[in-house]
Length: 476
Ligand code: GLN
Image 1 (tube, rainbow, N blue to C red):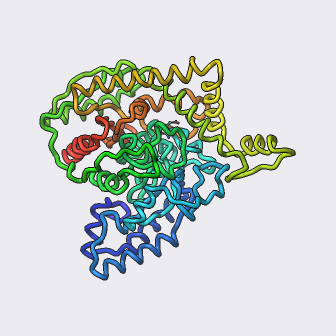
Image 2: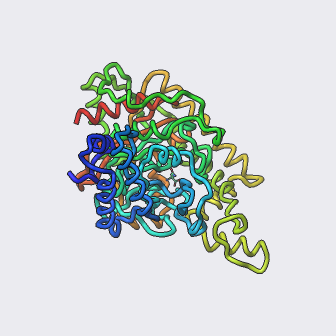
């Protein structure tokens, strides 16, 4: 197996035993990038020189006989809505096409502190709005499993990089499924931590009450390692939790005996492909055979999740995106006066989906409609949260499909935004409730495209998620 196809923990072993060097490993990943990037298009910016220089430093450290961090010398991709000082951070938007942040996101700093090798900034749907990466202002990313299909979104560049051997692991962000859905489409592991687990400082805001950064990896062990690296309270993010961060690798035990796993009946309905339903039910059977107890549960307000999300997220987005006015930073298109300049800038530089969200959001927030839409959505949000609180009185985990279908063809849904929004049916409730959720591969469909299942946990209980995910993976 090529180095670029291995997991971070395997590579760590090879690095510490001096079987390979970080320089070799980095070169191997870049050779795969040279071969595949034209076809996949996972990246917006590549940072080859920096990566090579950093790999050399890691090798010197190893040569000195010093101990290295678990992710030290491991090449990774960073979603391009995570600020990297001195490296362009575009959010895949023309409005930030030349934006170079003057500061680092906390998560990036944490990876740099581990001496991970940053390969580049990964493509996404503009400002993370989308489910296919087709909304990128620059190019569409292709699914490495079938180049005619989407990788999912919005972290499609990150997941395609990991699936295509163009990075060993990646960071994504998940506001309504943007880590889990593309992870499922690309056959990799993707985890959205509990809201507040990971600092959002330096993550370009889309919907601040929903956004969360998380790992995209080749297996569950790597997921725990990356989570270890990025979690923790941060004074720079007032919503980051002060809760203790456990060592997540301690959860990597294959044992689900006595665990109670709920299957919500609302997630196994018309609209979910039969092949997906069968695959996820087989996962449940597997858990049962390993000693878990499977029970049917109900999350009665699931049918309102999409409507709720597509009011709250655009409302917050409309507010967050006000800052791109051509004045402070980002692109500017001149006009006769200030208002015309702002209008020209936003008209020319925002893509269609971003404009659609801004319009929906401002409409929902406007006087006269606020109560009917935004406030109502907040009330339903509470009901959806309560569904989960009630369910978790009886179960330890909830098992669902991650997506209603496998990766679709590029172009297939662009003309129908509503159909695209329905892609998020299984993932948005988790963000609405602020809970942790993971997507884990569970085989392929008849057309050979990956299928993923989702495990949802109690707030701050990533440990049980990882334990169950690890158990499943080990059983294969
Ligand atoms: N597909 C969802 C949306 O377009 C989720 C995006 C995300 O999680 N960033 O809003």
